[in-house]
Image (cartoon, rainbow, N blue to C red):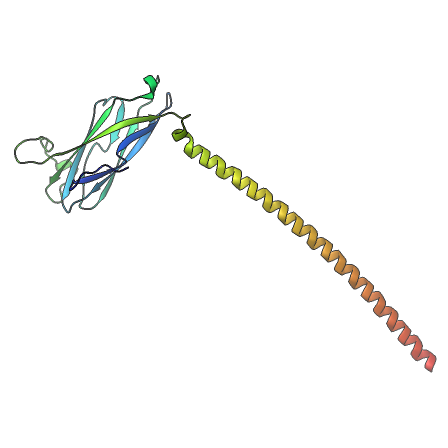
Length: 201
């Protein structure tokens, strides 16, 4: 799903961070951030567990009507969370900046809520998916089913080709036999004709 509000500066897809959770393995989720305006929009990503996640870029500027990909990496964990539930939260802030502004040009107070500056906040929750859950295994099952179908189709194709080859070989042998018989008949008729001509003399 996509997270956006009416007349919001940006649209974020998906609207939650979903991680396929496995012990001692890193995993990541990509967020697509779309600028819905004709302005330059700066963004900043914050989380309640900064040591747990690696966010790149965590700050940036999206050009008018342009798209930016934010990769959030969950560091390798040593134990499963209770009931696979995660209480971590992410906050994506956005605000309009001057045209042609680069991320390195952003002042330190860009996302401070003071004065007439408008800062939009978008909250994203975190969802852990177990590798054994239906959601976690969907892709693997799809690949497995596709492979099985491919194998079945391949076997059927090979069997059909074998049957066609056998039919072709049988037909070729029959044609060869018919040609041999016709050749013998033709030779026999030629001999009879030759014998008749000799006898007539």
